Length: 241
Image (cartoon, rainbow, N blue to C red; front, top):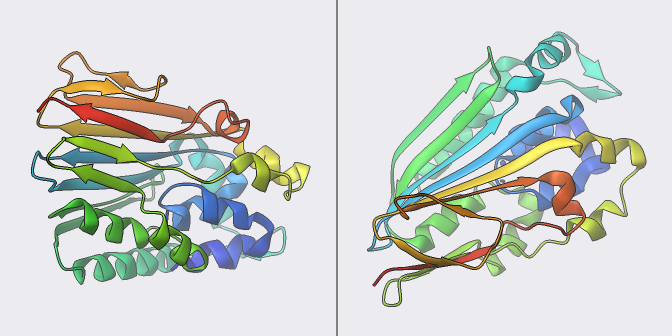
């Protein structure tokens, strides 16, 4: 998971390692259902002026629920073992347990919807340093060091500047992937939603949309556009002091 990834490794192994390493948070479920080709990852953060807040990560496979239901009845697909519901629940419980052990994390919640195949984990954090530790648990073990060195978020309480980084080159990684695997991402997307106590003064990412209240900002990125470097989820958001 963004992010332990027992299921990602079990199903797709090295064939789609780029997915596990370069797509944001919740890759444990992302890789689990890669054969569906249609999914959305939603990253939501509510940030208080003092740097505390809440993060919610959602993997939404509802548009592929019929296909997923069929896959879940199989033991293997294309030579890869298909995990059962109990396997998925066990893995999510492991992530939840790990999050609860992080100092500064509280109110850890999760939801598993096996009817529409929507999975969510959320928690509160005391500051952005803790937020980055949370994100580390949504990252594959193979990429843990990279994530530690390149923190995903930063927040300056004095200047009230919030930064979301994203330094991975999907286009370069896709050159290592077969045409068949590239088709997996044709209908995939990533949505980031950030909410603040103070109004937003400016946003450096021109693809992000600020709400009328100016206290929320959303960016929806088509995975194909990210691969082509036409859009990126990184942003610098200036809040009113």
